[in-house]
Image (cartoon, rainbow, N blue to C red; front, side, top):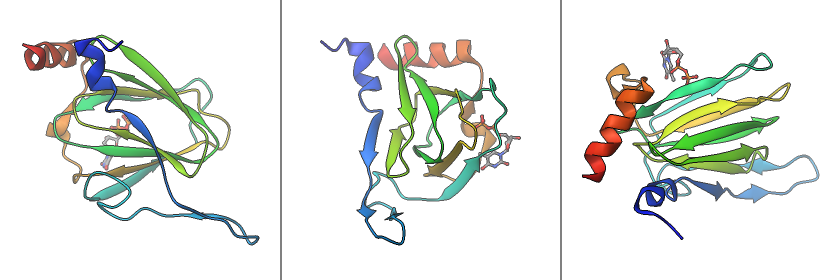
Amino acid sequence: MNTPDSRQLDAVKIITLPRIHDPRGNLTFVESGAQIPFSLNRAYWIYDVPAGEERGGHSHHEMSQLLIAVGGSFNVNVCDGENWRTFTLNRPYEGLFIPPGIWRTLDNFSSGGVCLSLVSTPYEESDYIRDFEEFKKTCRKTIQ
Ligand code: TYD
């Protein structure tokens, strides 16, 4: 059963993207606002992650995002300030949608693991919450 707190985590979900099967190799695509519930503004990708390293470690005020393992695999750990969930991404046709207000860390990168991130907003440092204690305070304010 969902607690009031875990309902926000339920918004974090895997989106299965279109797959064009082809003997020459498969193809997957995303169009802004079509397969993903936001307008696409920016893309960045994380690669060459040394074994044991962690990325992420922040939340966002406004930014929505879709994370895709376009190569290899990695884990995404998401938190609503109280509850945690872990998703393993290892399929280039699956994206993890993360709305604003969710803390995320990325770890357990495989060799060759590449995280493509499709994002709703231009890069703006003021949109980041990089301190977990501060993040938890913003969650409590939202719940009250
Ligand atoms: P950072 O947010 O720490 O990466 P992660 O997602 O692993 O937490 O970003 C690392 C650096 O890259 C930081 O100095 C900000 C910069 N950066 C940009 O300049 N533009 C971008 O679009 C992103 C995502 C990061």
